[in-house]
Length: 180
Image: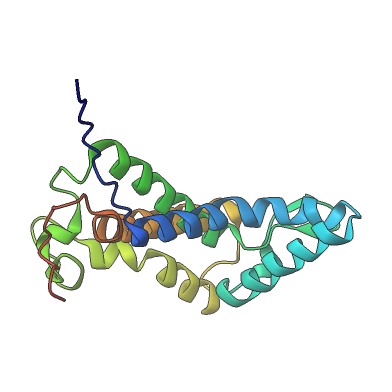
């Protein structure tokens, strides 16, 4: 008797895999960098140097990072880390819900970001971080971790609601951005 085994081919969404890898680095890198630097192990300190180098090039105020392992600070400020947290939350939500829901902005096309519609004021929410930073630069208030973190979080949530369906779209799922 011959037994036939059908093997379903596994298709890897490389964009999703790379995006998740980068998000994991953004989530874990900044808070572990001070501990790696403080370890005294040259290999770990070298990894911390790489994380600090990246933090210095993406964060407008890396010197405002939290003091986690004195004298070493977190590799980014809490505004940036709030943004990363917002992206993580939307990634987890997308993984659970699979892009179903009115709040995933890719279904509205570019107008979901650029033009505030009845469904989305995403352009305003995406600007929370830069608006808060501008207010700080203009002297309306000074840097405060309790103030900057929610602005980053709001921005990260808004960007995540737009980008997660694009980066992690389910196989065969179409979005209104297909073809752009």
